[in-house]
Image 1 (spheres, one colour):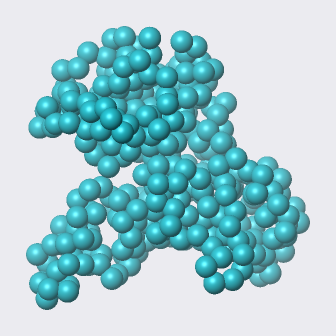
Image 2 (cartoon, rainbow, N blue to C red):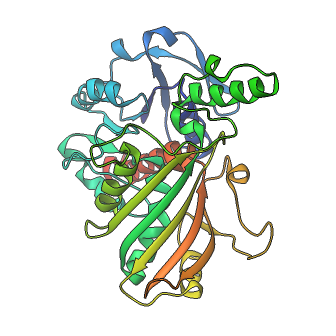
Length: 340
């Protein structure tokens, strides 16, 4: 029997994990929904027909559970992931807690599935940051063929990446502006107004002026794809509910053209190219909510450097950027390593 637990089941990503498990018909004989004590007894959907009652993470016995998908934040993961792992359950964690740990594999299944083998060191596998995941799927394919030396990425990230409270804040501020209500009454999650605005900060500032989100994209890309790649990230929060967008500019060692890159990406697993070079010939955040792939368009050469290329990519940050990637890791783990 295969038993799976979803930790943080009442959050945006936790709910998406449950739906993704059901939609992909993950071969679980039993699924448990877990959260903090304040959520115990609440009901969450599992697929179209099933409903699960939330149990208390603090008192749940993980013995006999094969895989735990965690999306409850770094502090919760720091406290509970080692305990869950010690019970013999493999943790696939969506928080930032374990991503830079050298003994914990950081995995995007389309890019480095072989890294999953390293889970035995701590019984933990880390899910990368949402903005990193959607970039490295096309980037890794281009790197394999053309050898990427440098990446400059600018992100336009939706508020759902900051949780349900952030989504509520965008909604409340938008409504409040039309009703002439003061912004400060609804400003709780973000340092600036988010409705009809763009905020050039995601996470806290670091000593060098970068934000933690920008640092994450750099270190995670190096760990997943190649430590020799130089990465510079600029991350902004935009007034979109679901879906992250990124403009990615790369410089390669080998000669690269937009035609060659397009041909390669059209045959890359997890990537869908829609690039018609005409109005409406490219995907946007509003159109890809609920989709599994990373959508790439605006592929064009950058003639300011010898071998340069730019592209636009969008993805559902709650699915491929979080829940789907975790479930895909679980699928490989079960098939190739746990062999139930």
